[in-house]
Image 1 (cartoon, rainbow, N blue to C red):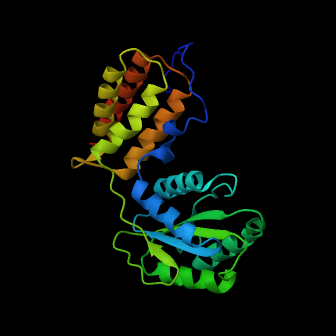
Image 2: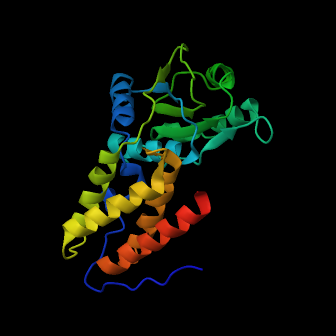
Image 3: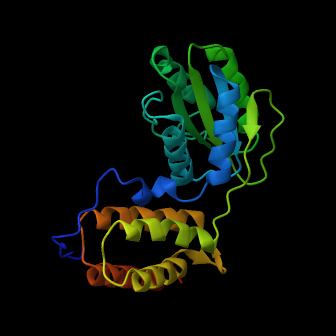
Length: 248
């Protein structure tokens, strides 16, 4: 049952607040490398390979990249396209990408692709180049998430550093969010929140990427209801306790 959250009448969080968005959590190195490559390639097909095929990670990396490149010059991020050979084949996804190419007449296009088998990466990339070509008025940016251990030796496909979330990333994300809320005793809120987030999102004393995004999505939605600090912390405590009971 969804918990009732009491709204703090004097604390309003702008819906467009970048700091409270899940996509602003870390990924600085990966997105920075993408931006550098985009600056060097002002048009055409540009691919990036990430050896982690999490749906949430791909979506949020692309959202952050779009923010960095400029939303006025980059089309909204499409849904993550998955290649799993059971529901959607390589050819199916290539056809879907090709159908979106008309958008390149006006803006860059960002497409996240989730691949479940390492050997499929080369097959997809080669078919994509053959079907769509490599020259466009704007950039077709394809971000591929594949299983751990994927290597990259394909022309035009840049290997990104493996993502690793660290404890300090929690504080780096939480502090700017709390600073926008005008809550009393902000330091206490930050301390309590970061401890509960680490407890909820850690696995073997390391942050689990998918758990982190589930937490971020939860708090981003919760904050839109403008709770008082005590209510917010209580909601986090209840979630943390419930999560611990169902996952351990």
